[in-house]
Image 1: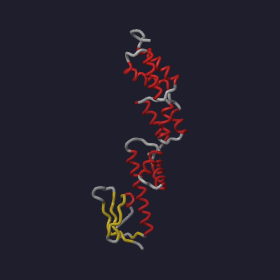
Image 2: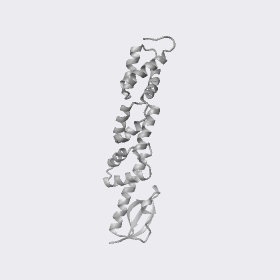
Image 3: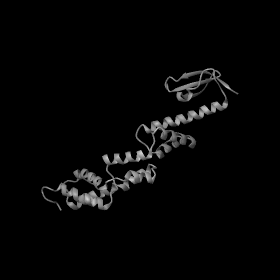
Image 4: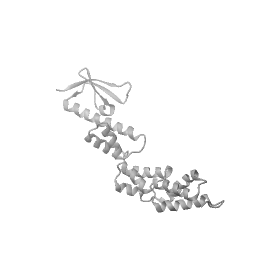
Length: 213
């Protein structure tokens, strides 16, 4: 049995949403983008009402995903996980993911590159650590490999070691080496890269005033 739209009212506290009244009674709220084609006096079949509610569920999930993405760039897996946490049906999740891709708001290749660039700038890490971090974010190995392809571990290890060396001044060589090796290893750099960076930074730090070896 069809029901007639008797009123459409924009919500006071949420102007992006509309209250829909059917046969004189409040029926449900919809995002304005979902309710855009509705008019007062229009009759809605039960099937049409269910279509509206399905579109509303997708729009609600889409808006939730947009809010989640507003804080920082995310991987597809992170967005899926966030939506599942709110009991979003799988079919709705897939529709939202596809919509985000279509609007270039979700791209694991761009995400992986941005992640690596951010780490390189603020907390340099080796391939091993970056690969582990990106896998935890649900990024595919092939995408990770592409993002790490041009990574210069030697230069990044030097950057990290030079910054760390400021807090290790005055130590003898063995203590300096031990602490720096542990630091760089935890950042995911391989031993040979760590060793080379340690030697260079030690040499730079002790280029005047003699060596403490």
